Length: 416
Ligand code: AMP
Ligand code: GLY
Image 1 (cartoon, rainbow, N blue to C red):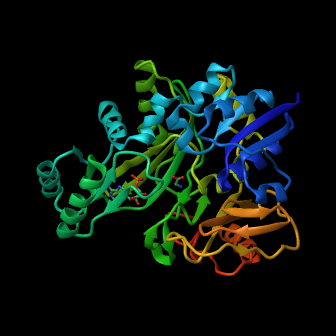
Image 2: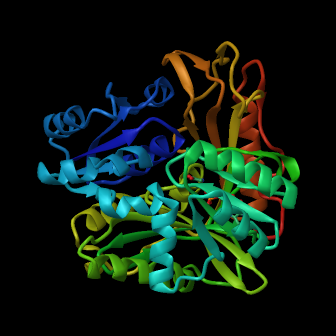
């Protein structure tokens, strides 16, 4: 066999998926589009592409004669990229536009959770100030406010008290026109990824995303500062998938919109049990950078089976018995951004499968760090502590002016 895989996207997640697919004996070529020059520096083929141009996406998939297209980010899925690619005869990992609304619309996700009796925070969808204030009062003043559309991690505001909830709620309502107001929940958060093909669900190992910018979970929310996998949790991944994923998969089949791809539930483990905070319809970033170390070299077979409707025919997924830690190296001004690009000092060695590039520009042999997430350094080891040590050693080798990372990835109660 000599399969070609096309991966759409340009971040650390896509670099990690490309590396995992390269480990498969069945795969002879992996192309990431548009990718980034750091990937090219690590031996991954990239191709220029505007992901918003669905004609160009289909053309590239046709030209590459690929056996599998993996859609990394949510944007193209919500725009209907998977529908278009499937209509052109491609096997696609990623849901059609309808089921992609699980991530594209918070109110749709909430309505599906209600219909499927999936445990989640109590909520109200509000369009008027009167309903907003009534909902805030009903949930005791401390609430999560959510914009009802894709917001790239910036669409959620956790109000500290009643005054902030009212003030921010009114401001957001004016900006977005429609909000989901949720009761605020407390507990550790975990990420549950599952491959889903129709009603067939295969839970992947549990992972953790460190969302806040600074040590001790302080500072603003970011796209993700680090990850650990697997995480210790009182619930098995398969049981959580029965609770949070399988009912949704069945519901979508019954509605005539079967899901095909990765469904990822962001869960919070409250004193009353697990609750779903959100669904994403793709792999998480940076969780994927940690997960691939547990899943390769067989990941390609599983992704292809999911995309081709053959997931039910596979046996149990073989997992590498190890621990992984992922530390994201960012510009010190992240997530505010701004400032000039900084040159990255060349590193002594290449680190395939360990260092995944994201926000870089320039030439492959002369990388420039952007103002966001620059690279994810991954450590793999027999224990979480050893994986962590290795990840930090590698993170320190990514050197540019203003390079920064959290120092507490892998410390804390839900890891190890
Ligand atoms: P979401 O995009 O809905 O996952 O929200 C982003 C982050 O906001 C989550 O990972 C949580 O840290 C936090 N969050 C969202 N909803 C709630 C909630 N109801 N209670 C507490 N924290 C929340
Ligand atoms: N790790 C969070 C996300 O990918 O949305």
